[in-house]
Length: 561
Image (cartoon, rainbow, N blue to C red; front, side, top):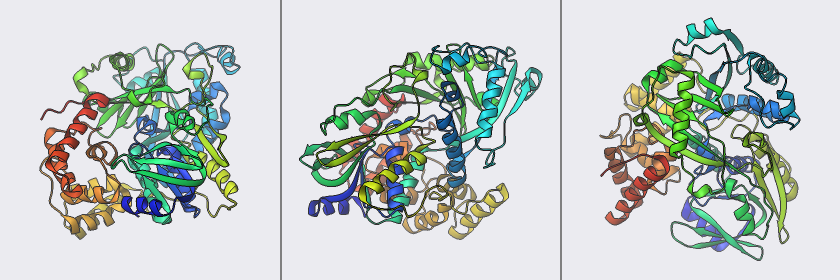
């Protein structure tokens, strides 16, 4: 059911069992779970899918070892199990990530960490090797039965410097354990939406459809593309608007404060020396101010982050120059001989974590756990999904769906625990199997091995079917960028809800993230987009200007025409 068909349906019949407001990962996860259990559901978002807080993720699927000292054992236990499920169910999107912790102290934090556990101390002294060792032992114990990733290892100073010659000589120990790397949170989200729609014909999703308010028991939704007002009469409303939850609730007459978010920013760097130095390892460590920060491999680039600053204005959040200075300095603490010029920054991103409102003294003490808040719009239950982590989205969605099924008088038909995500089914595990898979695509559809490999990286085992459709649409290769075809761009626009040109660069692909959005790429994609959408010259130029402005203001990327 395409956009026009969905809108036509609600012109004729406003009724729907479940309306989900907010297409971040919590809303999308709940949408998929409901669809897999046969529930009619409408998902709407004022922007594109996964364009808000969920797009500002650190790209990690992790349990959050540091939350142990806050006493959040349940959250960590749940998250490490869900991390493993993400690796197993979406191997094309989430891969095991060896994570190295450099340590500058041995005994530090051992005595006062318990005080932080009991909220008697804002932050303990710098965490030393003993405290981290204890934490990693607990961390490993939670998923020992799953055996998805190996347990941790400890290395002394000599071993650490042999493994990483550029590492600061002040490091006394390193520990390496495993978490997961989310290669593209945005594409992961699109996979979930496609799964839901493919499973249940009455699972409907509309991006660029904003909550406008209520009239009695009817919710007003504005189509941001046409200005048309849709009216929807749900039996239950799920408020999954993330940092915007309180604003949406106020529009329904609910004045509770649920959200007290913090800002997290990151940089994407093009520094080959740094990328080669870290290899496939993330470096995850405590900075001088006590903030837990990271240096993360991201394709051929490096992600550095993240800040944790109290903030509320989610619509205008950007990575500031002060944060940039902070990030560049933290790299220097670990790898003092690798200098990072500001010109190496190819992309910036920032967002507001939709954490539950708290009076904690420091942002690090605010819980990352999730909860469901219950209110009513007249007789209609309203469930607000507060907090949560990317890693635990499936468990949170399952909890939400169970409550929704109970409210609707329905029973669960299946669990999402072990269901593969689009492109992750029958995934080849060894490099030899992957080469055989891509070689088969190359020969069958007469495309280069390099392009077949690129399709596999982008779409997993769905790449064969997509290659077939590309061949039917247009196999012509693009001039501005390697391993892209006109047919693939057209396929994305037709099948993945692309409504603006920037959707292509920021959320259907990683082109902008990896610093590949040049003037030539922008214009070539714009021509295809305008042709598919039947835009006038003026409309095409407006889309180009919109993309340039977003890239400049939100991501620090300058594109000159």
